[in-house]
Amino acid sequence: MSRNAGWPASHPEYDIYIGASYLEADDDQFYNTFALFGPGGELLGRVCKGSLPAFEGWYFAPSAEPKVIDTDVGRLGIGICTTTRPLSSSGTRSIRRPICC
Image: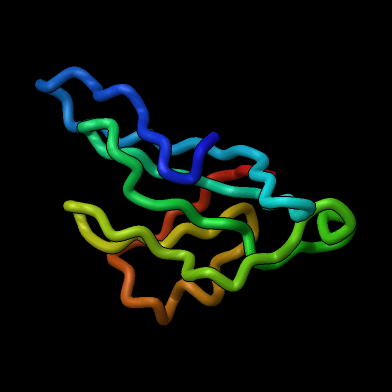
């Protein structure tokens, strides 16, 4: 998936946000990534997992990028799997935890 890819727009009468997780490759590094798409199909943001417990560090690289996505409904903190602690001070409206392990 391209880092700037979009998603087909949802039906105009619905205000649907779609989130998806995927394995992202950047050269020889692999990331556990979550992407959020807005109602118009636009990519609102992506978050790569930062903390890698146990064996995950053997396969994935950690990411120090911010774990927040700004949307029309507010700033969302994205904690993939068990990652939530750093989000409590990020000024987020809510914290979402997709299970993308």
